Image (cartoon, rainbow, N blue to C red; front, top):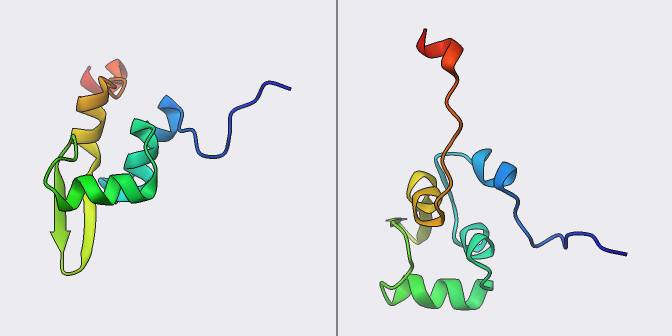
Length: 80
């Protein structure tokens, strides 16, 4: 039975994320686990922009998408 595991994120999932997301979700997008993701964040080596608010780390979703090469589709009807 070929199906995606619950840990995999689709392009649609990434496009539907809020402006910031948690480190665990961003790590899943890169195919890394929670422990490694936090290790990279603490070491300043996470591959996209991370902001800290108190004790909480948040990953900037726009930068996550940029690093992964995922662009939000533009709605040409809105531009007209």
